[in-house]
Amino acid sequence: KNQVEQSPQSLIILEGKNCTLQCNYTVSPFSNLRWYKQDTGRGPVSLTIMTFSENTKSNGRYTATLDADTKQSSLHITASQLSDSASYICVVIYTNAGKSTFGDGTTLTVKP
Amino acid sequence: NAGVTQTPKFRVLKTGQSMTLLCAQDMNHEYMYWYRQDPGMGLRLIHYSVGEGTTAKGEVPDGYNVSRLKKQNFLLGLESAAPSQTSVYFCASSYHREAGANVLTFGAGSRLTVL
Image 1 (cartoon, rainbow over the protein chains, first blue to last red):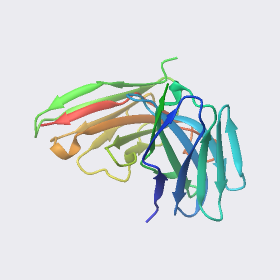
Image 2 (image 1 turned 180 degrees about the horizontal axis):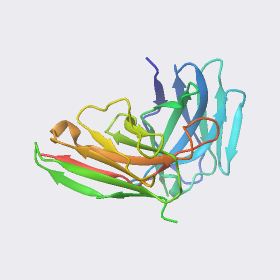
Image 3 (image 1 turned 90 degrees about the vertical axis):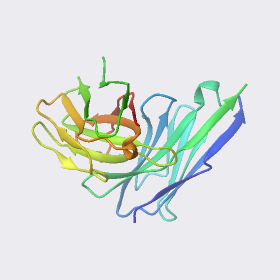
Image 4 (image 1 turned 45 degrees about the horizontal axis):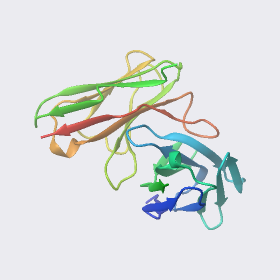
């Protein structure tokens, strides 16, 4: 069964600190991997998209990495801000049909 | 731009009642999707549509029906609501299937409670 597992389930950090969220997947064949940010009460919003050949992709203070050999991805947030408090969802797209599997998400809380 | 708009935002139903969730997008997207999001679980695809007049089953289609009579609208129906259908429902749309650089644009969600 295609699975996407994220860790940790939740994380609390102080404003200004860095953090890294993990995503492990067993999805095959792999097409691309996305990280979404979901604010409370809102729909998910795309942060990054990485294909099989890409190792890293940045979007401002967000940097995603991908190791297709070990099937692992991480999302690194630099100099966190209160507005980074949200759920971060890893999504793996597989096959050319564009089928996707969503992770359960990591809930990040940034405290002042 | 409104993007993807879902109505209603909240609804409480009794078991056995029926209702319809409406999704409207103003981006001229071909593909539209309905997901449900439950605590501790990732979003799961209920049904999707690859164009006006077409629908297809997703991962968890049982108990739901959909229609795409107009390109901009995608309706999700519950004919006989059950407590297991208590969830937050998200509609999304995209130009093409979610491959390559194509991304989903999500609505704000509709919270449904079935008593």
